[in-house]
Length: 142
Image (cartoon, rainbow, N blue to C red; front, side):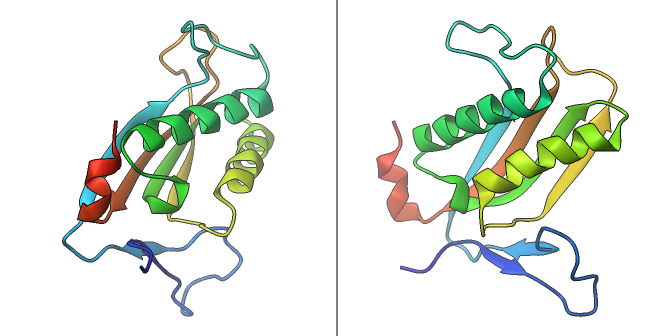
């Protein structure tokens, strides 16, 4: 079976970016919208207060878990938005490197944003995702 998400890289656009400029998913597919994955542990407490890198690891682990619950995986993602509570590009870059390590070769279109504040106390990072899976995978969700 082929992957439901095809990444589009246009040679007329800069090739130095670490993501595809677009993604295409042919129908019929099952869509999965994931709420922003947050750096919370199983008890709902923010982990690694003040640490962008460790919070990003927790965010990505939580994203993997949420996707798995819907019968999907990171390679089914068609688009992400990465939110970082910082105005410093160095902080955004540190978060991006962890995010990219989890995403591997599946460099989907993504927006990286510095924001003033996120929803939970001491939260520095959040990743929102949209994924697509073949209809046959629908029965695999919990």
